[in-house]
Image: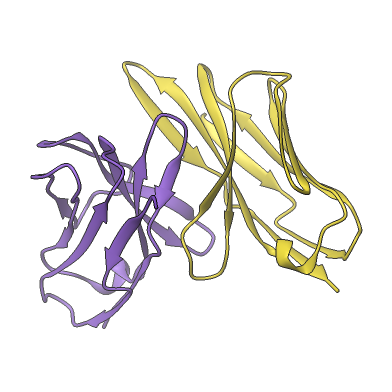
Length: 110
Length: 112
């Protein structure tokens, strides 16, 4: 079954404490991306990766890092989280026709 | 300016009452238009891709159509389980890159 798995599903953290949200896909897709979704702003792309070791900024990359050391994994790193990064985050893995999304990570930074 | 606009923002229907959702776009170099369904707290789920004006796709009670300026998602005889937010996204050429822009969605509620 085609799957994108994100962990954790829920996370509450404090300002400045580094965190990583993991994302893994089992479809051998080259293209993966991270989005955040906020009320009234919709889905906005943070970073994307077109293949292993190839990453690029999306529309809202400030405060985030990513890495793509293996094809199946695309972690999102917040080095020093701030309250304005409180949001619902989605990882997506894209084939030629469609994107498959993970279940989401609801992050709260206090 | 490249833009995707969905209307209405919210729609409430009675079970069996057919209607349409709209996605209008202003981009050049369209590569594809996508429809997704999103349930609360979950990731978007793929419904359709449309590539050129005149194209239509159907799945159960849903039918998507595309013109040069907009797409419609027609919902025939909806059921309560069709309640969700429906998202539209447009992929287009931007210089040497491809870009994807998402609309804000239409929140659909179907009452039994």
